[in-house]
Image 1 (tube, rainbow, N blue to C red):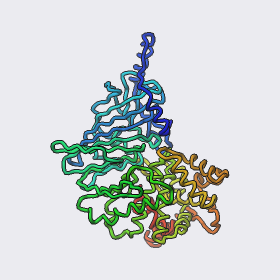
Image 2: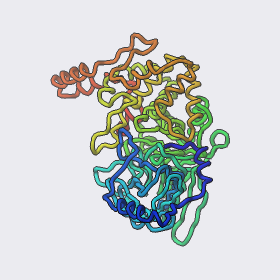
Image 3: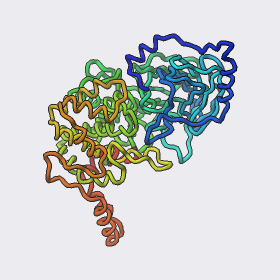
Length: 538
């Protein structure tokens, strides 16, 4: 069950309650404890794409994360994770997502609790069962290991001089114990202790810097709830560059000290990007924003809340034209509204995040660099059937392959999803669509929302039933006709593959790649942001 911020505040006022066991019930409680000794099993909240992510029975209010960095990024950090939550069911056990690190101890409300691992869950058994509606504080002392095998994607990113985080879609729980699903957002306090000479930055605003001996501890807090997949911690020999955005918004960027001057021409563009987005959808939703320029090879950029993660090379390689780089910057910025402030209720709702970010990325390129928006949408339409065949419809993406948990990040949820938005705008008109966009990010601010919520809001704004129109666009195996564009055609996937194979036989494969690429359109391949361009994996 998801509680919105207002309900969370109401629940927060309730006192903690412990289960009082009358003498006549001691026998029944003993049976419960015997049952608790049965083999622990991994749970999940029933996400279609990630069945074991998240856990039922409780709702997290806040995380307090403490990391101690040893001065090298190939050794585990010592960590303490404290979770404040309320139960939404009677619980004899509490499952947390945690899959990579050594657990030293667990306490529930200050009392030692037993624990064991089950799959990618840490299963905690408190001394007494927890009744529905009770508050609990779980404290886990553990290590957080930044070294992974080849089978692991995401989590800590080892940079040239330290660490950063990339937890999307299901890797926060390899960094810290949590309820690792975007339907359970919470406030975060993050403390990082590192040797002097390093700088630590995390989501939200700084509240304290404490220097003691040879180390420094930084503390950051978020003012808005955040999904676990959006947590960010940067540790490195970095400089924090401060400037002011619209309405006095604090903007801070994290950049390697040696790159400060070289990257300033890019960094100073952010306030203008924020102002551009605010004209489209309304006030920026958080307390700060900035870019983390990581000296690392990830293959993607990531919208970590209030501090987006970028590869340094995006800004230093001459191969990328300025308009392209800026459009990618806008893509991650747009996520602060679409994906961060309004998070997907389930991972099948990812199209709402990536489709909107792609929409504003393309719109910025159209307005600022004369890259026609309709040209890109027409190219996406041509490739849409192929994308649906490969990755599923935008709102029902195919599950990731084993060992490829980020496999849901395919073109069908990027340009394929932006194409759904384009069809909706064609159907209800631009004024109604613009009203829908603003209302979406205001009504569901700081919450998680679903595809059904978006369709219902579109019906409310347009004053008409849209399920018959939207369902084929969202869930159909084939791309429906585009309203107002009868000449647009989608290339048959089978014919496209057959043509590519035929070309491969004649030219040894070079023409095959070219033939397949043309079905998606040059405009999509060149400007498709994370999905189609340089970061297909993310």
